[in-house]
Length: 258
Image (cartoon, rainbow, N blue to C red):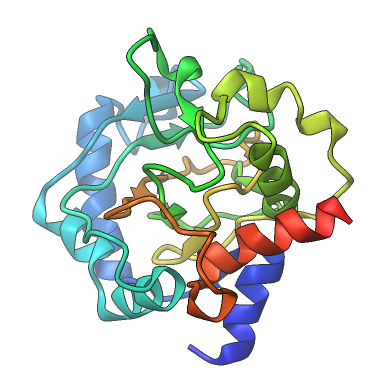
C-alpha cells in the first residue's frame, strides 16, 4: 500500500479497500446469512425486523473473506505484527427496509475489553492503548448504497477520542461514559461506508461511528468484527518505531493538548 494511503489512515482514521474479497465469496456468505436470519430473500413479507444480529460465523467462506492476501498485507502495514488472523467473522447487524426504528443509531466508539464488574457490553471499556482491539472492520457482503443504511464514520474523530482517553488513564472509559462525551468533540466530516460486496473499511479502533435507518429496498449484509491485537499498543516508544495505529493515537494526544 502506498505511503500516502498510510498517512491518510493516520489522519482520517480509515481506509476503504475495494475488492478485498471476491463477489463469489460474498454471495456464499450472504446465502449462509439468509439461512441464519430465518427470513426469505424472495419474500419481503418475512422481513419483519429492522435489524437481525447474527453472532460469530466460522464457516469456510467467512474465513476466506477475512484472510485474503490484500487484507493480511494491510493489517501488517497498519498494526505491524501485533494482530491475530481472524478464524471467524461477526457480529452481523443485518438491516432490512423498515418503517420501525432500529433503535441503535447513536454515535459511539466500540468498547474492547471487560473488567470484572461489567454486567453487559455497555459497561465494557476503551483505553488509550486500545486494549483488546487493533482495528474496527466493516465487511460489506452486499452492495451498499446511500439508501441501504451505510455505517457513518466521522473522519478524524479518532484523534479527538485519543485525547479523551489519555485523561482517563489505564482503566479508560466505559462504552457509555465515552458515548456521553462525544457531543463535546469538534465537528468532523461524515463519511458513509458505501461500496460493492467485497469492500472492507479498516478503521482506527477509536473511530466514532453510527448505524443508520434503512431507506432502500435491499437488505444490507455487513460484518463488523475487531482485528484482535496480540498485546496492548505502545505509545511510549519512539515515534519512528510506532505502527500507524500508535502514531494516530500519539498525534491525537499532541494535537488536542496544544
